Length: 84
Image (cartoon, rainbow, N blue to C red; front, side, top):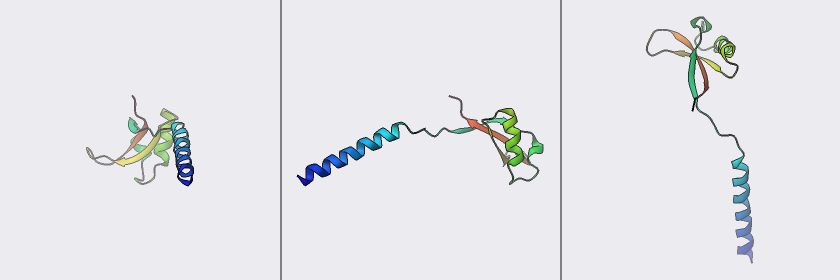
């Protein structure tokens, strides 16, 4: 009898987890969609100006000051959900 009780509790817990996890939003990848103005990153570690410039382009974008490997200096990159 105890085994049946444990099995039913275990099965109920699995069903609850599956029902709840089905409604959770899925994480979406972020891609560089635009390049913000170079003047938005006067201080490399501060993303505030870059973020506001990217939000002017599209309110859903997030701006981040990053070091470019292909060229000198820090650039403002605007991130958003990757296109399908």
